[in-house]
Image 1 (cartoon, rainbow, N blue to C red):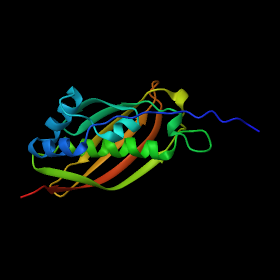
Image 2 (image 1 turned 90 degrees about the vertical axis):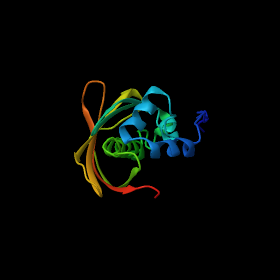
Image 3 (image 1 turned 180 degrees about the vertical axis):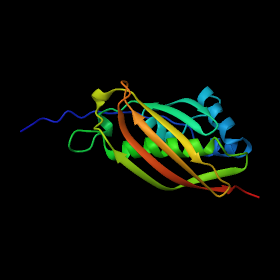
Length: 167
């Protein structure tokens, strides 16, 4: 009988309701820039994914993430949900960079293509998202995950609903 060695991971985060309130008063790009500078805490999901903000400009975002064994599925590779979470975040945040204050978005769909396996040995991956068609009611985006050598690991397309908040 095999002896299991249990591992543990501790995650800390700030209450996302507070940063969500700040988001309403800022353009999407300003909000993400403040997250990048540390003025506003990042989303709790980022701690789970070992994800960090790299850059944002209108219509484009870049994140980095480091997979570990806590992201594994039962067959010993990173779960597809890790890929999907990174890609959804990149598509959505790319759309967010195009929005004025008082506007929000939500993902309507996400189509993912898994191209290569990711494991803890893959190391840090880069996630890029960009808007392919901005809009007042709907926006469209794409994203990709690459490894340190630039190999394409996964791609996604997404559509997002855009809507006014409050008022």
